[in-house]
Length: 232
Image (cartoon, rainbow, N blue to C red):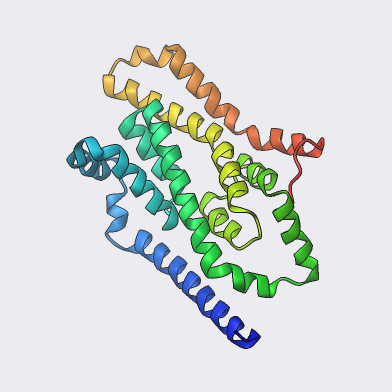
């Protein structure tokens, strides 16, 4: 295949990627899909799914990730519906499925075009990401880099898939657990109506972990500055 045809094909695929992203945003923000993304509506859907409810939720989460649905919304729904522990498991699995799909969409549709735009100056960063893929992805996940844009964006780089997968899987565990534990614990107290439960160790622990999560990015920055984490 000639260079001209390769360039044309890469440009067409990139145009499809851009169209996909624009369409996804429109669907989520300006169609009835938006009304579905509430605890009440999603809860009704999962109740109808019966024993397949966890699988249905994880698939909904994965689709939401690819459609640019805010991760905090999906995570809150998971913790609210399934509680702090199962909610964490289902949210983490759904996020991993969604991040993997988004990565491959970005890799297949946008990598060739991105590579054609990379000059000598940007090329060294692309190579660095390939060499230090796991550390780079882990670092960006720990500092709470926007989840969905990063999924697609990493697909445009030379990072190896398994470095991306491992860095993502490990990097989102802490934040996901803290958030689902906090939301799920508060929801349990709310539903029970036993407001004395607000003074329980679980609530204090969930609040402490939630507050601690805001300090994680700064701690990771200091850790990286000390030379323990190498990011591209």
